[in-house]
Length: 200
Image (cartoon, rainbow, N blue to C red; front, side, top):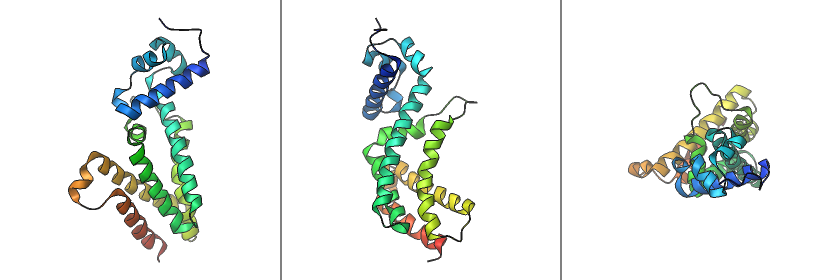
């Protein structure tokens, strides 16, 4: 029986997100169901749907928290460098490190798919875009002659390459190529791409 009056809506949301995070961290996104989350916090699935509307809503809130955590880590990494190349390398290494340390939570951000016809809400899309924005800032410092579109494309190219290396590593595919660790690949990608993009 659900304890319908024990907690406020905000408290139920917080409890549900904590339970969802624990399930995904330990078992992956595929193990997450409304029934499991509701059971973990002592409420019925119906109560959960009153707070999040549906399971997709819960997952997006969970992913928003993961993206906030990743953004905070990467911002600290960028600020710890001397700007320019050092900051971009620190961002790349920070991203790889986060993907390895929080593999299932990180994976949930990119594994989750909304039903056909539904759009990612602005509050979640903004969190994704600001990660790429962290790369754009030092790129503009390194190549002031490049316009905004070129900088944005370069930031996305770097991000996509490093993200791909992380996915290949976590899937076990990277080992088959014997091409180095994801950190080594990230360093190489940053160094060689910036040499071409900045002309130095």
